Amino acid sequence: MRRLTRLAFSAVMISQLLALSGCGGGVSEDPLVIVSGTLHKEGQPLPMERADVGLGSVQLTLTPVGEGGISDYANAAEDGTFTFIGAGDGIAPGQYRFEIVHQKSGPGVDELKGAFTADKSPIMIDVPVDKAGGEHELGIIELNEYGSK
Image 1 (cartoon, rainbow, N blue to C red):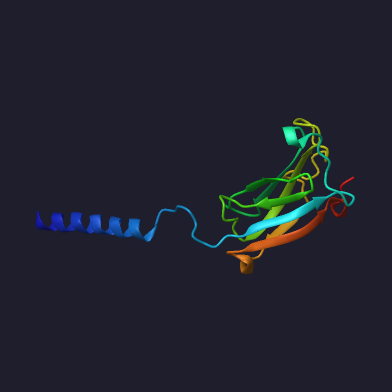
Image 2: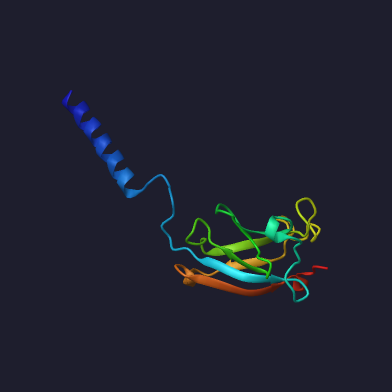
């Protein structure tokens, strides 16, 4: 009986230590990076008709390359600027595929004809580890450099 009590006590203590140490996952405590830039085609932002009322949008996705990771989403403003902030503090450093869907007049038609979807986009974004805890400015991403017509 005494041995059973010790085993039960040990099991409880081990489970408490595991819980306190954070085993089992949860939110990452690693420093994140806020990623921003500007998207252009032929030197200009992608046109959006009546973006002020929700008609027209440029939807952006950063999808981690390789196993695991969490995708993040943003919309480009009318001037082409965008910011990926994750859950508020940024995204994890690493390599991402940059996906773009341009709906000039509203939902339904991708003006880029699927050239920058998850399985086709040639644009790769590196979010450097040394920017963790801060910001990473991508500058201007010109779609014509990636074969967009």
